[in-house]
Image (cartoon, rainbow, N blue to C red; front, side):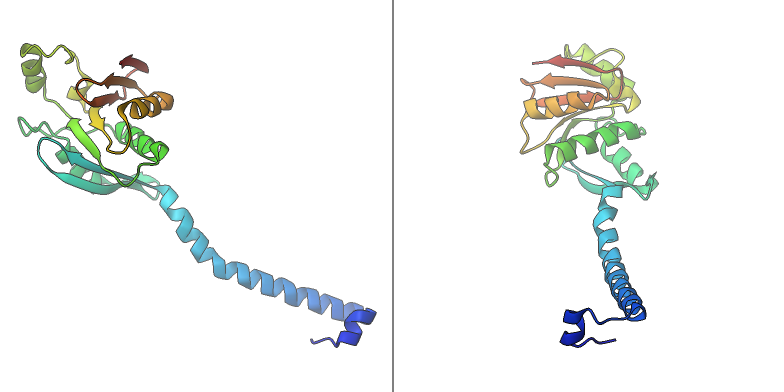
Length: 198
């Protein structure tokens, strides 16, 4: 229903006309809102995805993957990550703790550095490799290293300083965090919460 300027100025609308007008405006508002829902859903969807990007310093391999979406871990993506983070010395593959991936995702988001890959210094280590590194006199290799359980990783993130990376990982309070400035990496694991290094 259209109103003349005189009717609007004088308040000459009758009660039924007011109800019709309200219904029309409400309908238009609901239609406009409905048209924006798909865009809003598209904007929200990425929040329900967890992505990681890796560059392995020893093998040169790269991986960019969505490992969690629509409320679940994606097995094909986890397999790719397990392969990338294998013991590159022996070729042995071991499942990586998904909580470790979630911690990496948290660090990535909290750092605001989402376009650069995590550089992998060390992922999974077989007991054989772990013992070999210990016998070579590497004092930083623990006898019962969580690397052997797929629960630890040594990383750096281009564009984020080691100290900042260490700080963010410590604030997550999700496991162990070690700063190895002289070796240029940060160790993170999903063991007990503890911090070390300088």
